[in-house]
Structures are given as C-alpha cells and as structure tokens.
Length: 262
Image (cartoon, rainbow, N blue to C red):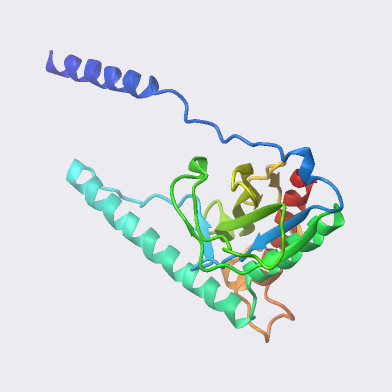
C-alpha cells in the first residue's frame, strides 16, 4: 500500500512540474527605419574580455561503479562532480593562458570586426569608451548595468552593447572534437531616449550545428580533435588553433550583427 502511494505521489509531482508552462521566449525587435541609411551613427560601447576563456564539456562518462546502495550512489555522484569541476577548471586555466600568451583579445577582435561589417552595410561606427560593463539577470531580462557617456563628444543615433557571455570551445565529451564557440548578448538602444530598439543573444559554433538569424555553425576547419593540440605553443604552429578558431568566431558574430541591423 505504501509503495503504491509513493508512486502516486511521484506522478502527481511530475504532473505539477509539467504544468508550470514553457519558459518565456526570447523576443527580438526590429530596428526602426530611422536607423537605416548611410547617415546613421552607432556608438559601439567598449566590449570586455571574459574573465576566463572556457573549455566546456557537455557530458562526462559515468563512473564505472557508482555504488549499489543509495549512500554509495550519492557519494559517487559527489566525487564525480568534483572531478568534473577540477577538470574544467584546469582546462579553462590552460586555454586562457594559451590565448593570453598569443596576445589575443576576443573583445578587441570583436570591436574591429563589428565596426567593419556594420560600416559595410551603411552605418557609421565609432568607439565609445565606457567603464567595465556588468550584466545581471537572465538573458530574457535584457538588463544591462553600465554607464552611458554623460556628454559624448560625438552625436549618435544609437548605442550598441555587445556583452560576451561565453568564449572558448565546446565538446560533447572529453574525447570528442573541440568546437569554437562564442555567445554574446546584443543590445541596441536609442541615444536620445535610451529606449531599447533591438535585443537578442547570438551564438557562433558549438558541437551541434545550428543555423538561423542569430546562429552560425562553426567552420569545421577550426575544430580540433584533441585539447592538447588546441593549446599548441609557438614551436608547434604559426598561430595557436585556439586563437584561429576564436578569430573565426569573432568574425561570424560580427556578420550576424550586421545582418540583423542592416
């Protein structure tokens, strides 16, 4: 009887979870016609580098013997989680160190590429220096915490924020290819009213190719089979594979931004 009651309780809980409804969808607003044309001026706010370049692994192999009893399974899961966290921290540190040794900055590369691609579709783009930007809340919240210039030396039609959410490489498992991945949050606001004109997230790369208005699959030539080769040094190659892939990712994101704002 108690066993049957337990199954009923689980079923009720599952139904309750299912009734919460889908998460709100990310909405996108088209820029107004007044921003289109050769005379439009966009102020590109300073883009910040991530604190760490990330080597993200989506799934790790399960331990061979997770434990027969419930306490054994709990202990096994805890050890497995600790191992995953330590492995990720080690890979992140090594990847970040490699990229910094090659004097690469994804923020600087993004700034150059975004300006180039936006100018190609008719915008005038100027850099707007701002202090460190802080992003708070979920991506659906579109909440930007930063400072606009109080008295800009140039007049603008809009300000463009580009915030790096993730920069690095993603693999399905530790022994599968590492694919360049760059995820950014894009926010375009009116320079006069500070009202939002356009906001979305954009993704380049990742191990599962996705193509769309705000997604671009990674070029396969920049994926690497082994993490050690991703962090190759100057004696092994002319430029680190890690840097080459992120250069391609930066250009891909800039293309997506230009397509959506032209």
